[in-house]
Image 1 (cartoon, helix red, strand yellow):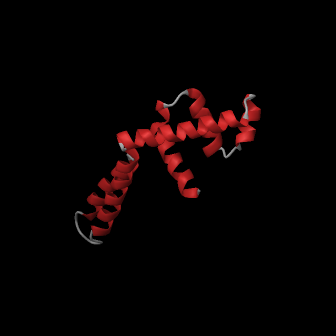
Image 2 (tube, one colour):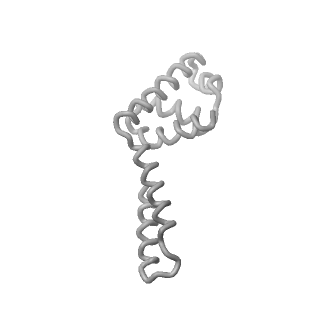
Image 3 (cartoon, helix red, strand yellow):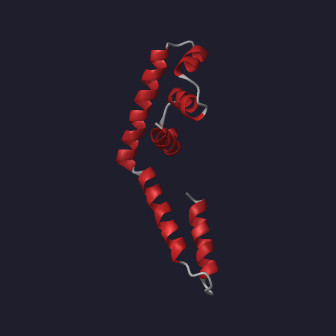
Length: 110
């Protein structure tokens, strides 16, 4: 369950601007704020089932966006490459510090 939650949180970070305000709100409350379906339903005077359906549909949309756009997959691949490059930089080399600075810039832009 934790892996699914982590994945949905990442997908939400990448694709939230493609969601409606209501989808964004329910996903934020459910995944980021850790509110239960019942708590969200009570807060917005809708049924628990309505919240559940909205969250599940939105999860499917996020997965669909990822299938088509691959932003999260590309992000993960960049992180892997940066980590491999960090291990290849010699400890005492004249250019090592420059390489490390460039890798840090790559990490900051993710």
